[in-house]
Amino acid sequence: MTFDPTEAGAALRLPSDCSISSIRSIHETIQEALGRQGPLEIDCSKVNRADLTSIQLLLSTAKTGEAQGRPVVLTELSEVLLNTIQRAGFTGDEIIDKHFPQKKGGS
Image 1 (tube, rainbow, N blue to C red):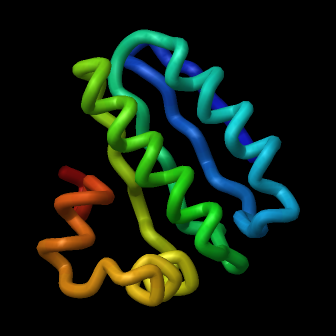
Image 2 (cartoon, rainbow, N blue to C red; image 1 turned 180 degrees about the horizontal axis):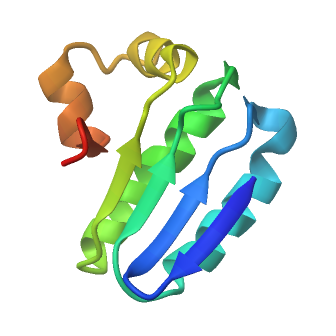
């Protein structure tokens, strides 16, 4: 997992394994990133293993950022992560976008 703090906020790249076996280190890195100022972007492109714990953590991160007045956006959702989000009960693009804010197409 990589964390790259920048002047405008923070960028975080999730590791390929976002299952329960690695969730503690992911949580610690996200907590560190949330402690910084500005928006937080989470790159999800490399995720090839995910379970409900990763979905819970991403949802909690988005809600924490919102409560702090700090934008948290996901970029490049991998197919595996998107499928896991859908299996967790978040179906349809509007529902997913509402709970898991995404940056799409360079916007």
